[in-house]
Image (cartoon, rainbow, N blue to C red; front, side, top):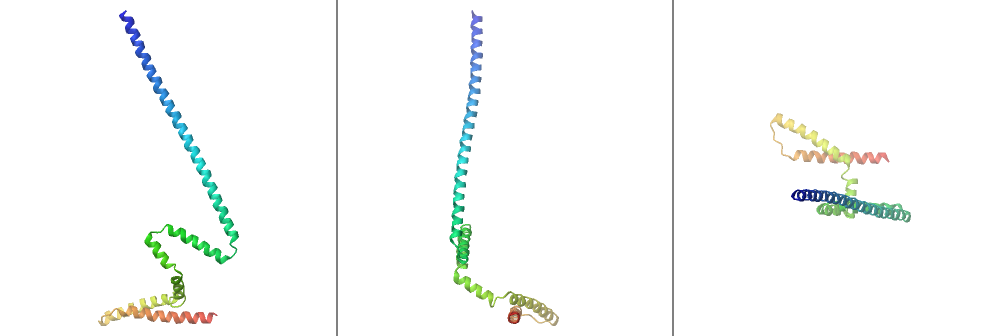
Length: 179
């Protein structure tokens, strides 16, 4: 009888081991199914969000097309485009850079800069001033070294101003005869 008890006990242990293995296999299959369901849910949600974003983008595109059709005046369209671009770029700037940008793009500062750029800060005059300053300072430095004189430091500034004036005169004459 004791053998029968041992055998039935062993069979019971084997059965419980098999049941535990089946239970674990079932749990892993259930977790796999849950993971697959969650993945499908995420995929469905992502698909839905993508469709919504596409609809929003399409609506914005349609609004922009309507705006373009409504704005027949090229100057107004150019100003609107400029303002949109500036607003978008300013969102990417740091607060100090944004403040500086606001100052630089102030209409008064822009007009002043344009006037200065068209009159006294001409590229030809600045280039000729720089070139004359370089040549004159090198020549004066060589002469000063040879003769033993000391330079005061004003030579560069004076040569630049002289070259700048010569460049302005040259640029003015060229513009006068070009017309």
